[in-house]
Length: 219
Image (tube, rainbow, N blue to C red):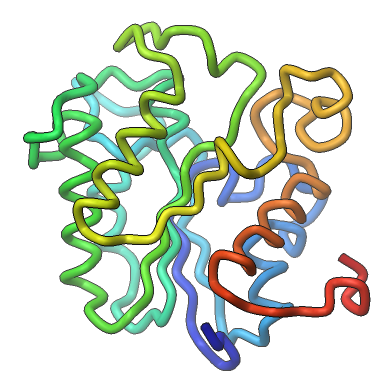
């Protein structure tokens, strides 16, 4: 995909917002936009937010299934990166594949992915799964499921709509349960540091089929 002069919308949570970086220009999508010569990257990352609607007041902010409406319709590439907070501190039911409303996690995936296709009929939409964390094998306090079950739900629903998925959980090479990885790329066990964001950037380029000389770029 040629992103020269193109517009990128990115919908996400704290990692997309840039928590863990030393500066905004080190966020994965900002590095990618600069590297490929994109016209603009719009950051719709909001820390703590989830895909699904929560039961009761949500102090973190509106879910992805509502905030996607804030994104302008003229994007050429749309990236969606979430699910960790649904697992970590969400209270919506996990749901089933047949759900189609944003009241459950699986229903929210269906709702969001289908609505994005309608909103961006000419754009490329790429879904990104959660990264591994230092605690992702623990059962969710809400659903009793580990993070990988949320990852697999995202992949299953995306496949239903023929949307490409960048499975960061399985392919990023980031496993913060290993102390050396924790120190190098994810010091708090949840948010990548600058080096971790560079890992994500490289994988995004591969997913989009973009060849770039990372040596020249200092990456």
